[in-house]
Structure formats: structure tokens, C-alpha cells
Image 1 (cartoon, helix red, strand yellow):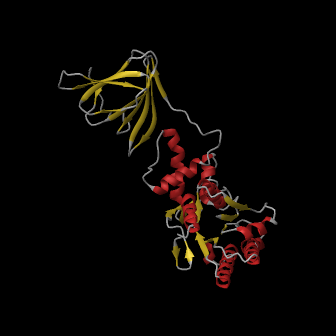
Image 2 (cartoon, rainbow, N blue to C red):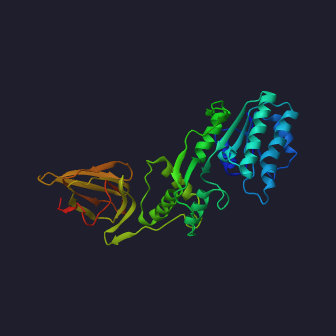
Image 3 (cartoon, rainbow, N blue to C red):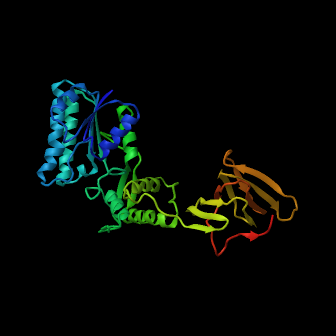
Length: 369
């Protein structure tokens, strides 16, 4: 298929073009405000589908709303008519088309123009009234509160919230792109005369800000947000896409002694804690047991042995481990255990515990294996 995308360098357009190419749609005509206008004729002549994403939402003059959102739509449709190209046309509108403001009026005018074009030519038209769209590559300090908040918070800049109780309706960019590609394949999600993204999130502005500040704090606390919540997962990915490029990394606190080191990597209240343990050659660590806490050990470099003994038994159980053969060893409660480095190099072990370490209640009882 030959696909025309107007506004190809905008937020939605950039994400859509990237995914179309990722899915091997190779004939994608990218049209933007800096594209040679003469190419519009060529693209409209050949296109099998049009994603009309170009528009104006933050002009210098109010008149530019109508010029950008109605005027260019008219030019696009007239060009398609000129070549008798009745391929499907999708247009990016906004929920503000229902409102009596300059931006909303211009979006409504573009919608009406496309509906009339569909009636006149028999063309399939798809009108999407998008709510607030968030995700990577959205321009901050422009027209998206989420993008602005992500950028400012990640860059240690203040944010302004006039009313934290304002309710936002949001769609995530990947969900938008999935829906648009479904529409390309004739599987759009229709509701009456309009089409829509089926996954919409409703959340207060203040709650978004609180989540973003928690993401910033999570790097200091070595924690991870609750990824079981779909909105939190998507917002966290969005936040990380705005990190300053010289601040992708952050240091961890290494607890170092003559035996090696122990470093907490990730802590989550829902899924426990992941740590990295480095043991020097000949060193044995552990010799303790737990009432309830459980662990998983994974040696990723070096070789060693993990020994167990049930606290009321004299029998010692041994599991030989090596970075050459990755295998997880479960550490059940009620077994005192240790791990010894049998190699000539440092042994690196990834350790997971089902709870974050609490110095007030460590659940760690010393007992030699």
C-alpha cells in the first residue's frame, strides 16, 4: 500500500510513520510543513490511504487555526479530487471540536468538510476526535500538560497546576498508532459517525503530577512503580523519554568489604527486591536462615556452591552453580544456607527476595550451615 501521512513530523505522525516502517509498510509518503508543496500532487495521485494528521494548535494568530485546520484540509481533498482518488481518508480531530473556541471551531470545520467530501465522492472517511494524547516525542511546553510535566520534573524545573482536580481524558500514543493501523486495514473502532481509540484513561491532573514526582523519586529509592497498572506503566515510559541525555544513569549504593560487595538494584513493595552480590575467590557468604522470607539466587559469572541445611537436621545439601550454565536456585524458609566462591575470579550472583529489606524486621537468623 502507498500511504500518505500529513503532519509526518508531528507527535502522532512521527510515531505512526516509525511503526508503519517497523511493520514493513515501505511506501510511506511523509508530508509536513517543510515538504515541497509540489509533492502533494504526486502523493495524492498515488496514495491508497491518507492519514491527515497535519494541523495547527498553537498559532501566533487565531486566524491561523482556520488556515491550518480547515484550509489545508480543503487543499488536500481538492488535490485528491483532481486525481479522482477515492482512497480512504482519516483525519485527526479533537474532543475540542465540541467546544465554542477558535481551535475547536477550526477542527469542527475540518470534520464537516471531510464528511461532505465523503458524501460527494463516496470515499470512506474516518474522523477521530482524540482526547489528550501522551507518549514519547511529544513536544513539551506546547499543548500537552503531560509532556510539559514530564520535561520539567525530569529537568528539575517547577510545574504549574491551577486546579489539581481537573479531570483529564488521555490516550497513549502506542494505542493511537495501533488503532490507526487497524483503521488502515479496515478494522477501525467506530462509534456513530466518529472513530475512536478504545483505550482511554481518566485521571486527575494532580494525580498525574504525583505519579511523575514518584517516578523521579524512584531513581533515588531504587524502586519501580506498579507496572500492573496500565496507565502507570505507560506514563513511566513517557517520563523516562524526557530524561536529560546526560542523566540516563544513576548510581547505586555498593556495600563493600573484604569479601566483595552487595548492592540493592530494584525494590518494589509488590514484587520484592533484586540485588547484586559479588563474592571474591574463596569467600563464603550467608550462613543464615529465614522464617518467611524467600530468595532466588542466579550466578551469572564465576562458579560456586550453594549449601543448605534444614535447621533441625545435620544433612547438608549442595547445589553447584556457574555462570556457564544459568539456573535459578530457590532458597526456601527454614533452611540455613550459604554460598561459596569456588573459582579464581569474582563470582557475581543476582539475588531476588520476596520482600524489601527492613532493618526493623530483617527475618535473618544466623546459623552456620
